Image: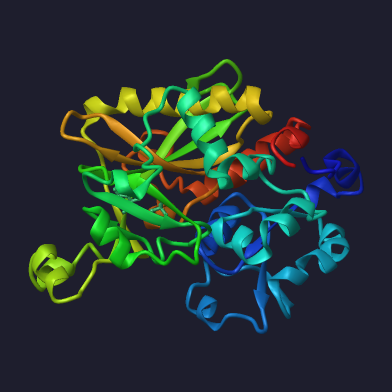
Length: 355
Ligand code: AMP
């Protein structure tokens, strides 16, 4: 649990001049662009020097930069940032660069519920949360000797799929595994991947209604992962493995996608269950989150991961998605976050969406 008192921090804020800040990476162009569209000033936190590529994107560039020597130093600037009325929008790289512990202690008003982090980053707790919400996760294989169908082996804390590998037998597993690193073995689910981008507002009731607040589906993507997604250009995976080339799962980009419409009721049911469960477990997930799923040939969803904040998969939709279009034209996740902050500020309810 964080010991941050959000109300104490907000009392000194000039609410007419809130400023949206994030780390210059991941989905920052979209976050700054969305904030700008909603009339907020923005601040980008960068290491070493101002990042030059923003000059090529004037509508995605922050209004000002804070240059730090190391992301872990952000906490040292908390007072200065509070004086600028900064609200932080965390994204995956923000949390990774800062480190989970520093992030939890960061004395800055932060969009979302920071308590979600321990439920998301601990595989056992994540499983407890998602399965008790009724979602189906890929089976875990506890003993590698029990591998009798394809599995994916994941190293703890590995980011962006780095080092993951697929094994079809125990022998293959033994050949490939690095036993020095803690790992986790999961059934490899055959099907098509969909990464679903939800937005949950605990304070607005104008979307898919939940026991408290309401849920939106803003977009979905499929990740592009090297080398698995294009390795077949050189031959079948089996052929390549014979000559020692093994596919890898390193994320390099994101591809827009839509799903057959008849699956949408299931998508909302899953999102609803995840939010409802989270309310009881840790006071509720807030804002953007993503369920990473595989849809099987029986049209069942298997959920292999949850990300509890804006994901980079929303980046193809800076100008809106085929789903966001039915909510409001030109609505990105970054813009939706800015809208939530604007609405909460107007209604004097900021403490309900920040932590
Ligand atoms: P993760 O870091 O858990 O998001 O996994 C990285 C990538 O590995 C995913 O984007 C998928 O392409 C793939 N993957 C992860 N878990 C599974 C699974 N159980 N079955 C099939 N593919 C998976």
